Length: 352
Image (cartoon, rainbow, N blue to C red; front, side, top):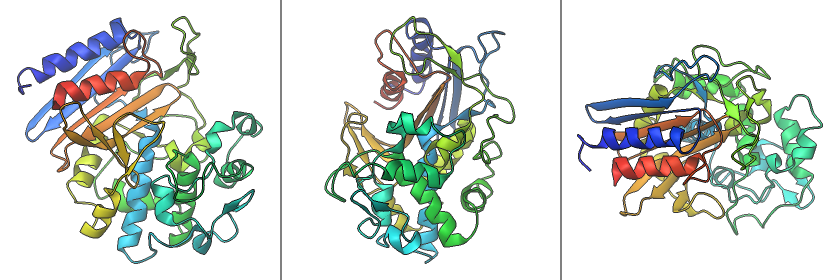
């Protein structure tokens, strides 16, 4: 695929995501050295028909994990803790009961999802019993369940791991996760539209698209709800951040380009383990994943899914060639089962 034809092919995928997949709106931005391209299809607001714009902010879901892991690895590089430290060392008696043991779980096992801790977001009934969700509440929901496997024996995606990672950052530094995100990443990279909302703030400050959800009902005629205002306290360090395509480019270009971490921590981040029951053809490192395309090309980045907003950011190992895409919905019909199918097509068009 030449650089001349790639944008045409990308725009075709964007258009089909709307006309065939039924998504309200989609955007994609590519940066490859000096080349930069931005395209959209559909709308930012189904009521007004206004278009999606480069400056629009959106919820990035689990891409938050890459930010949190980067902060924690910077603290490792500063000598404030080690990846082989146990959870118990930094969060005494927080992980206890029902077979869960913080003495047996290392920091790196939180970051690469090999801790075996139950994923608290799988217990919707318990989540619905609370109006607001502190990290301690979310961990307690998880610990009401036994581990899904013995520590270090398997891989299982669990948002609980990153709620604990956020708590670790605060325990190690004595400051808030918000402050450490700003100190380590947001301020050095001038990510002016990237933030983790405070507390239960449901708003998206600044220009943004509406976020639409079918509450993960796969039927084409499922009711559509507006989830733009959303209390993300139940996601926090596991998925609560907001950003833009431009800011995500800057972050991943710096991260993959080895401008945020020392070589030792960079190597740890990129040391992957096989995934299971997750995205096909992926490995998972410390807050980052690799995806292998049919051609054999390996890309690095992260995806994020939240009510009404799905995001993908993947690029080459050196960070010079990166694609960011966002759908302001959590469905895609037609040939795709969900937005991941759309994103996969975009990666193949741009990188294969």
